[in-house]
Amino acid sequence: MDGFGNPTLRPVILLAATNLAEHLDNALLRRFDRVIEVPPPDRAARAAYLRRELLNRQLSQVSETFIDSIAGRSAGMTIANLRHVVNEAAVMAARQESPLTDEIVGEAFEKIRMGEAKKTPDGETLKRIARHEAGHALIGWLTGNPPVQVTIVGRGSAGGYVEKEAEEDKIIYTRSELEQMICQAMGGRAAELLYYGDMNGLSTGVASDLKNATVWAERMIREFGMSDEIGQVFFDARYLQDGPLAARVSEVAEHIVREQLDKAREMLKAHRQELDRLSSALLDENRLDRSDLERILAADDKSVPEIASGPPPTL
Image 1: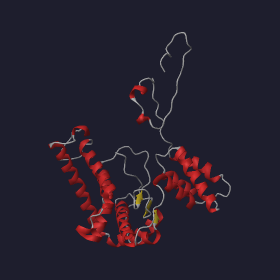
Image 2: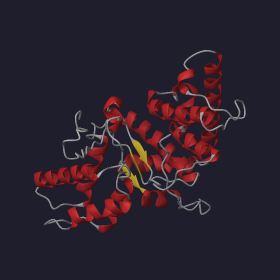
Image 3: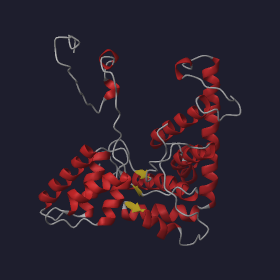
Image 4: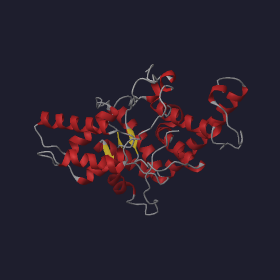
């Protein structure tokens, strides 16, 4: 790009685009006068694209309702990502000599996002996974943040997972909302402790949940001034690698996570029948969507809060 300033040459305007801007060298970025960030498509744009691509195909049996569901669950995905899903679904339908259906598109969507479905584990392990995921789902339900789906079909590094619909316009979270997210993140461990006891209830299946809960708790302390023990201050993570202050932040974060774990245990203990029903339904069906949760969990509890969707934020 050197030499473009030569007065004998006509003006040259250079445009460049990337979806990996965070990996570009700063020396390169300084050569551009302006950086324009183009956000991923919103829900309406994703739905419009999926309708155009899926409803106009020959032999398509994909429903409008399912397209709306995928549009809501695909927050953060680009059109290129969605095109990958559509192409994968078309390949799967061709291999099965089947029309394009909700089930096929759903499997393609999960495959692109989470990876190939893993082999079903032994019965006892599967029961433990079902109880773990049921714990997450039930805490979400009881705190007014019920999942879009909960499944015990393992993909990637996950033995199962709970998914909530994105609130794409939400940019501010309160302390109580973040605590609820930590509580739900610890719902899987709380369920295992309830079923298997304080010793055998500790398993490696909590690794990702514990990581997320710890990150949220530490950011509550370091960035958001939400800890009474630390106070209204901001700490750059680079200066908290070691030393007494780092130890203090870790101690307070552990207290926050443990407090929410204890809360989750009490909630699940008080709703043990619902937890049992949800675990059994997961073992029978492998995957439950929101309508299934309404059927299973609202059957005996008319006081359950009205459904309000929303994912944990990317903190």
